[in-house]
Each structure stands twice: as structure tokens, then as C-alpha cells.
Image 1 (spheres, helix red, strand yellow):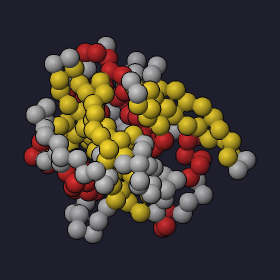
Image 2 (spheres, rainbow, N blue to C red; image 1 turned 135 degrees about the vertical axis):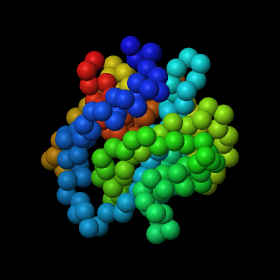
Image 3 (tube, helix red, strand yellow; image 1 turned 180 degrees about the vertical axis):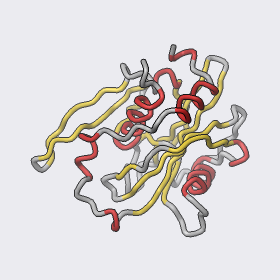
Length: 202
């Protein structure tokens, strides 16, 4: 069934169902952060239609960055005063980081904001990206862009989790491996919620 997912399936399942929140055990690590001290940001979960099915776009962050260096993430970044809204932030950051033009992007959904340990509230936007997109990577922010089949990202058997104790609090960390990449942290939390939302009946 996962391999048969197409654009219409994704749109229908996301828009017709109530959004699922993030794992409560994973949120414990950031429960102490005050909302007034957090900065807003957004990311773009880009689906691409290929001959074999849907893919999802990921980037590997540059290794010299202050926040989450070298980690796998969705394109995105912090809200700027010039952005009209957080969807605009996701489109602008995607273009700045990897050069995908906004004319190639069609946003169709939004997930709840997620508080991160680096003191951001991150809002994920789901979109379809035209298969003929071109990239121009900003090496100051991103090391590479790659696609992963949605049938792997949305398969609960590929996403693993483990409990850790930090400062006497236990919290849950998610992780997913694909080829030589390991996806974890905020990105894996978003994937977990997206799985529960889109694939809840399987």
C-alpha cells in the first residue's frame, strides 16, 4: 500500500484528517523552555512525483553551522521580519539554501509547530515540488540535497525510537536510516507525526 501512494492520496489523507501532535515523551526535553523566549521558524517537506512513486526532499546541513551541524533536515530556517507569514519563510529559505524556485513549489498542508532544544518553534509545511526542479546549493548552509522514497519515510517499520535519561528526565529520540544517511532529532520527530497522520489507518 505504501508503494501505491500518489499525490492525490497524500493530499486527501492530510487534509481530511485531524492533524496528529508530536510524541509527548519526545517533547519532555523542551518542556522547560518559555514560549516568549523562542524564535519562529519553518521547514518545507517537499514531495516529488517520480516514475517509481513519491520521493521526499532532504538536505544535509553544513558541518560548520552553529545549530545542528551535519544533520539531515528539511529545507527551511528562521522567520524574518520581511516574511509575510511562515509559509513564505519556508519558500524563501528553500530557495536560499538549495535554489528551488517557488514557482516549482505547491504548498498543500501545515503541521503543528514543534519546539526544539535550540529554542525555536518550527512549523512544517507540506508541498509538492515539480520533478524538473533545479538546485543551486548554498555551501554556507547546506552540504547536499537528496531524495528518499516516501514509501520508506512513511513506513513505521523504518523509524525506530529509544528512551534516554537526561537530567533525571526520560525522553524519546527517533531515528531512521537510509543508505549512508541517518535522520534523527527534530526531523525524525516530524516524520513520526507525519506517519501517524497520513498512515494512521495502517
